[in-house]
Image (cartoon, rainbow, N blue to C red; front, side, top):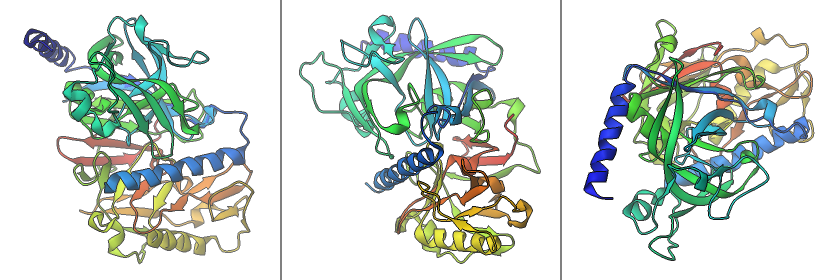
Length: 442
């Protein structure tokens, strides 16, 4: 890139940051489970478990080896047969709308795309050559060879003019193949006006594989990475982002917001506000936290400290892309046995297709008899999820399951989106803090 071009780009980004320093952007977010009515309830749960298990495996592998902002609507994918949450983004010039999975564990933002004759024709796609602001990243550039290496850039480079290709792989086993490019994103602000942000990295995916991607047009990558959408948005709107996940069984007409920067309407206030350390450099690009224990009622469970130690293969992350909560074996056994003691007398069932081990007929169960489960953070903060977030309803009337999955040993622990639901979560990347509080998310 010529020096004058780089200077003009820098001036443009500075002007955008200044112009929108008192504005807020928002995108809709919808749960993925709402997109596949042809699946039976049991098949849906079985699919969710399979995707989550594969996702956790790859997460484990990957771990080893301003005052105002912008808002995007955020909702459950339940009506689409999906176990994730969705938002909508506008890409290109002219702008085109896409429904994308909101994933705090993914670095790359991409959409289904057709470019140079490659790509799908039978679904909603971004026709790259129809966007006047679309520009591919060259395969000979430092950006391709160095900066995008962690995003599965490929070494294939037939000519200096060829685009930088990728084969992006997700923790649930899904894949996306295409080329890296930059393009303009159009975002809605809370004052009702749109704003355009040029030059954002985007993947133009001509081929995808995996059940977790079937209900979406792409992925919004929110991981802690220089190449993620989070990095670009927080650079403009301020170093915070937050979200509030509605009940995962909500229909597509119910949504809340994914917010970048400070949002006065969703400010967390005492005494409900809890704050813990956000360990941004502990398990990059994931959002890690320091858990020191789990309690049931007033009793702290006997879980070996090694479970929470990253250097020993443990640690804990928050992940909006996983539905269920994964616990290292020692923690899993302590939690499910501790909760099962309070479900004595209920008929234990094992409906066909359900992956969870501990399922019960709770049609006559009084939820108030189930004690509060809490995650304890280093520093004293405590996260107390709603009971329906860990005793999860199934499609079979009256049948509910403990929403935990054994992760192995050693293994990282993952707090999934169902456990996070109906809480407002604020990630302050400048202060390295995670704040949260109960919310209806309505």
